[in-house]
Image (spheres, rainbow, N blue to C red):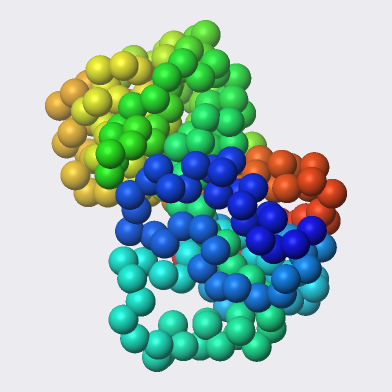
Length: 247
């Protein structure tokens, strides 16, 4: 498949143009024109690039790209990463907010489905778009949700348990989603997000609400894997590069 054809498909499917985002979504680095093998990774970092090159990928699709808020200088870390990609001839495609919010392969919808919840609607407006999702989960205990997340996302969770021990409605904002705690408390019994932020503690406590932090990285792998299946269905060879941060 030609690069231009695949980029057109991704731009349209992910509705790239509808999002205002500090990330420059879409094709950030143009490389080989003929695409046969596509790699997927959360972060545009040298480790991802090296593994993609070792597997002879023609294109790397990531959630966190290289260019945020424009490109002013090409030096230091930016130079090192750009140099690697340009010399390898590998293209880089980025889907940040469009991949969080997507109604089919989005991180948030996918996490709901992973836990057996039925996606109902969207919330948590950010830059003009609702990027979070929520839905009915029947009834599960907080402990059950924690165990499921740890097993299915291969992560370690932290929780603020100030609400009911039983969850019937679940909301999700992957990555850094603590900004949505108050709104989530109005529509659900528990919010699942990625990274813990200091202000989350008192917000959850005062709202008598549950929040599960499942890791920024872990909560943003699942949308890429769902998108990978879509690209694979186009007849392209695909693979996922797992580079979780180790603290």
